[in-house]
Every structure is written in C-alpha cells, then in structure tokens.
Length: 267
Image (cartoon, rainbow, N blue to C red):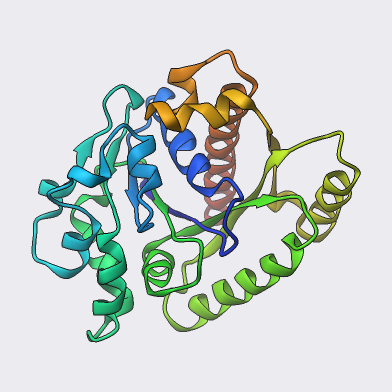
C-alpha cells in the first residue's frame, strides 16, 4: 500500500531536507520503492540527491502549472536508490500563480495520482513555511512527518503546525494524520535539548520516534557531495540513525496495519 508523507516544519534549520533525502535513501536500502518530491524552492533536496537544480528542464513548476506528464519530470537519483521529482526556484513563481487558480490546493494531489501506486513511499519535502506549496503537500499527503530540533522555540512552532494540520483535516483532507515527530540535530550534552526532548515525549507520547538524529559532522558534509549519508559514510552515526529511522517507520506501518486488520476481524 502506498503512503504519501509530507515532511514539514515551518521553522527552518531543523534538518527537514536532510531527513527527506536520508530517509528516502534509507527506505530504498530496505528495497522499498521511494519517490522524493522536492517542493521547496531552495531545491536543496534536489541538489542533495545529486541532481543540479540549475540545469533542470522540467521540475515541480511544470508539475503544478503545466500539463507536462509526471513521468517526464521524474528522474533517477542514481546510487541513492530512489526516484526524484526535482524542484528549484521556479517553484516561487508557481506559488504566486497558484493563488490565481481554482482548486489550487489540490493541484499536487491530482498530478501525483497517476504514479502514487508505483511506490511504497512518496516523501514530499515542503518549504519552511505554511504557504500554498505546503498546503498542496498537506492536501496530497496521508500523513505529516515533523522533524524538530530540541530548542527553546520548538514547542511554540509545533503548536501552530498542529493547528494547521487540524484545519486541513477538517476542511480539505480528512485522511491527514500525524505520522510522527523526529528529534534532529540532537546533542545529549545540552541540558535544554534534553528538557525539550522530555517535554515532547510527555506531550505527544508514541508519536515521538524513538530514533534520534544526532549532530554529526559526516551528516552535515554529505549534501555538499550530492549524496545521502548512507552512500557517503555508511558507518557514521548519522547513517546508522537514519537507517534505524527507516526501520522504525516500516515497523510502525506494519503494526498499524495489523491493528487495523484486528479491528476489522472483530467487527
């Protein structure tokens, strides 16, 4: 069963794109078919996948605003092991133009439909803001995955995002749910980080992934080489953490499916 997951946080610098690229590669390493959609005008997920955003002929702009077949836009991320729907600064123009269209919040959902069934996971890298592009991602998604850095303003920003998810679920996309919260760039020596981490667990319980992504030099270096961490340094702490995250995500999916089967059997 295909799963569309929007990876988002309106606060920048929390490891959102790093998580998109490395989770995609780690899921692909478990032989899952993965499509990564770069919906961020910065195009960092595209560059981190080894594709030059400055040389794109087709990308997210053409997906949202032109009738270009989606199969013509998707490219191979090579050794990373997944497929990529690339994006670049053209998406800024796409956001402006979307505002003038009818059914503008469902454009991504409709354009993804022909290919969603070909993948086990479709991961969407959202802009670091709650704009029209992010709204399209949340409307297309089954679930929201939230990377969060354990710092002072984390909980405040998270509350705003949760309210946005609730509103979208009520008005546009009733299937939308919180997939989970991922603690990123974590330094266990930092007392504040440990306090915020504990608060997240107290507030959100099992929605907080057990896997924690540490601060790791090798993880920070990998994007400059246009490759996921498991291809850059598979033995690094960052690579091990993202492989563990992929395993935890798959395990959660299996458990949720088993519980759903049990409820149907009881009914």
